[in-house]
Image 1 (cartoon, rainbow, N blue to C red):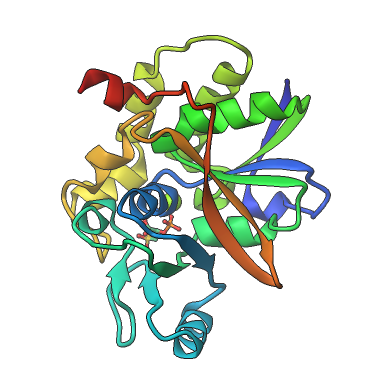
Image 2: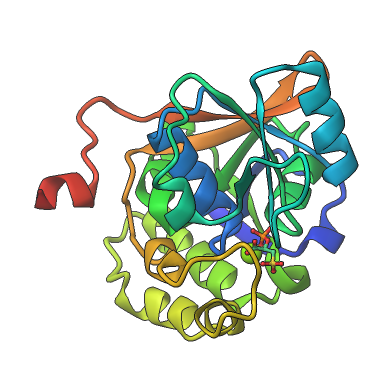
Length: 236
Ligand SMILES: O=C(O)[C@H](CS(=O)(=O)O)OP(=O)(O)O
Ligand SMILES: [Mg+2]
């Protein structure tokens, strides 16, 4: 499969099949939100939009990155989301990199949002579509974030039909500046275990697809082949 990796500034709207990657932390957090029962995630461009959407939909929960703020219910932390009861809830997510990247490609023919937690399922969805070309958007640091590039390269190897050892890719993510900042307590709205959760490969057996629903960008889980069982599930 032909592939290329771009940063958000290079997205030009011509992408057909896209995987938007944010390992730390937007799309690890989103995957955990679905695992905790969220029905859908509405992506907001900024904090004001997130709060405006919430105001129009009583019962929806607003999530932002960085420190929490008035009106927000959740932060962009997989470890903290792990404790949230989100069964049937709609979450409105706003982050600095991941959700911005997803909004930039929301009109693509197929747009998936990915992290290591859903890597295998993401590759299976792409393979099943029969597409011969994919654009990876590495959302962090204008396309230079080591953890997102490592995940893109890992996905690329999966799509090539290989069974790559995730170890070296995870090592690059684990030693990235983002991981260092999170471990060092230099990011707000974080938990010390966030990095560890962002480095779990195939924690979940669903991919995540973003698309427009009545003009709104919505992220939903996309189950893959029924026989697909995550590595984490196999280990249990
Ligand atoms: O929450 C995150 O990890 C980042 C924002 S910050 O760098 O922590 O301020 O957002 P994301 O879009 O998930 O990369
Ligand atoms: Mg990030």
